[in-house]
Image (cartoon, rainbow, N blue to C red):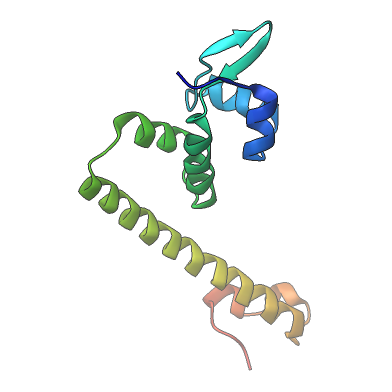
Length: 128
């Protein structure tokens, strides 16, 4: 059996704070395998799991969804469908964010006085 890693070592190697590791443990995403006094100790494999958690968080998955994915270990085809669905959700978010950005950029140069009466904000098409 590989030597267990102290929580401080896992934190150092993963780039996560020990508090984040304890939080992930409370959420059921990782599990300590032992205690060294009051300190948690983990198998080295937890580092790969933490990297997958970090990648999923960066991709916008909720912790609950990440827990489901990690615990269910979906088949490759199911995981690909899940990722495709999430990519479509991200595309929708991007469209909304672009519309917000465009509205803000328009507001900076809009000549309507007061700005709150600009028809662009009502019909979502730039005024001339």
